[in-house]
Amino acid sequence: MDTRTHYDRTARWLHWTMAAMILAMIFIGVGMVASLESRPWLLALHRPLGLLVLALATWRLWHRWRHPAPALPDSVPAPQARLARTSHVLLYALMFTMPLLGWAMSSAGGYPVALPGGAVLPALAPQDAALYTFLRSAHGVLGYAFFGLILLHLSGALFHAWVRRDGVFESMK
Image (cartoon, rainbow, N blue to C red; front, side, top):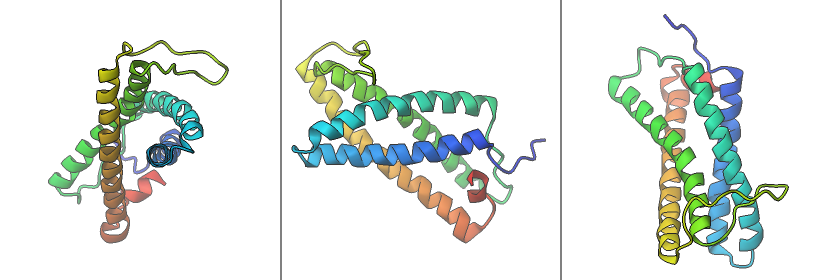
């Protein structure tokens, strides 16, 4: 029987680092759409940060597979536990989907994705204006969905911290 009540140090570091990065990415993305003047430097920040999110998500998924999450307390009702599992699956899916969609969108728009140091990544999609438009729209819609899911996750965490006081929130501290 697993009696762990906390995530390990690596899981906590990945969680909080990625939380800050993903929120930054969302606000940078909104800024790119809102300001044509700031768009070039925001985009120059957004692309490598997105690739870093993708790399960290890969590490995080591997780590989670090797170090499963601690069990929820028995006091958590089954519907809440299902909602927690579903929201975590969706969060992980979006941690991979958003950077890959951005990379494919850039490829379809004919914008090479370069790593710091100058290496250029291979295109994920053929250069095609209609595909670029579709992928850009999907990237935007899923960005809003990601933000909504993050708010739901944060609401659940605060509910456990302030209302239930059952140790779930503390497991990630």
